[in-house]
Length: 386
Length: 104
Image (cartoon, rainbow over all chains, first blue to last red; front, side):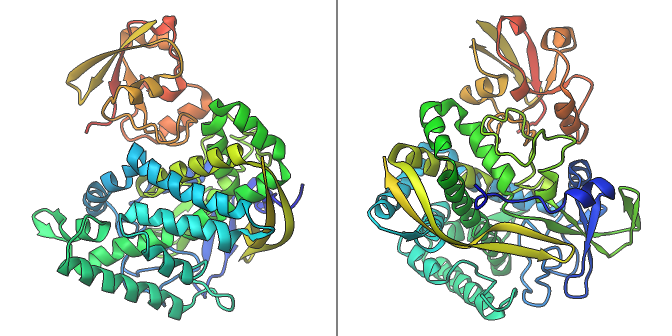
C-alpha cells in the first residue's frame, strides 16, 4: 500500500517555523508552508508579484535563463492581468459544455480499451501522456493529429532525463508555437491561436509575442501536472481496488473524490512570487526583490485545517485545498483538468476491476531542505477488466 | 420545497425552487450569473460567494470556521457573506434573499 503514497516532507518545518529554504541557481527561495500564509500571500499580488521585470523568475526552478517570452496571464499582475484574463477565461470554461465532454469521453474510452487489451502498460507513456495530449487538442480546438507531435516530445517540454532545464527541449516548443501562430495568421480557424490573434485589449490587438505567451503557458502548465495526476490516480486505484468499487456504487461521491485526489496529489508542488518591498511572512523578514514560494503541496496537508491530511478520504466534504493555486492567478486549466479526471475515473470504475503494479520508479523533486515525491518516472501496470 | 431569490448584478431578481442539495448547485442548475461553483461544493474555490439579506441571516446561519477563513480573504466580504455551497437547501431557508457577490 506504499507505492501510491505521497508522503508529506514538509510537516516538521511547517509546524515548527512555517517556511523552508531552497537555493535555486543562486537565487534563493523562501518556501511558505502553512495554508493560511499561502492563501494570504497568494491574495496579496501587490507585495508578492508575479509580473516582475525578470521573466521566468517566479517559476522554481527558475526559467530566467531559458525563457524571454512572458507567460500570460500568469506573469502579469492586475490591472493588465484582469484584461488578459477576461479574454481568455471564457475559452477555458468550455470544458463545462456537454459537446466538449463528449469529445473527451471518446478520447478516454479509446485509450482505456487499448490498455485493457495489453499484458502490461507503462502508464506515463502509454496512458497519461496519450490522454493528456489528445485532450489538449480539445482544449485548443486544434486537429487531433497535432497530438502525435506532442506525444513525440515526451513527458516534459522543459526537462530532460539529464538536466532540469533543457533549453533544446524548450526551443522545440517555442519554435512549434511560433509556426502555429504564423499558420493561424495566414489561415484563421476556430482554434485558440486564431481566437487570440483576433482578440483586442482596449482596441489594440494582441501581439504575436503575447499570443505566444498564452500558448506557452497553456502547453507547459497543463502537461506534467495532468500527467502526474492521471498516473498517481492509477497507482492509487491499483492499491485501492475497493475505491474503484465504492465510486462505481456511490457515484454521488464523485466530486468529493476528485477534489480529494487533487488535494492529495498537489501536482504542482509550489509556485514563486517576488517581493516588491521589505515585508514579513509568519514573523520572518522578506526582503524586497527576494523570492518566496507558495507551497500548495504543504498547505494541503496542514493539520490546522485538514483532519487526517495524509489519508485519501474520498468523501471529504470540506476540502479547501490549493492544488489549483489561490487568488488572482489561480489555475486557468482547472475546469479542463477536473472534467478530464471525472471522465477518466467514470470510465475506469465501469471497465476496470483491478490494476496490478508490476514495476515503478518514483519521481522525487529536490527542494534542498525537502525531497518530495510528486509522482513516478515510470509505472508499469496490468489493467484487469471488470 | 424552498423558494430562494437570487439578486444578480445588484439588480435583477431571480426566484428558484429546490428541495435538496446545496444552494450553489441550485444556483448553477438555474444558470445564476456570478455563481460558478468550480470546486463542486467542497469550499475550496470561493466562486459561490453571496450576501444573505440581513433579515434572513438567522435563518441561513453563520459560516463555519473553514468557510470563514476563506471569506476573510474575499475582496468584498461582509458580515453577511456566505459561500453558498455550504448552505443546504431545505424548508428552513424558504423565502431567503441572496445577493450574488460577483457582478458579471
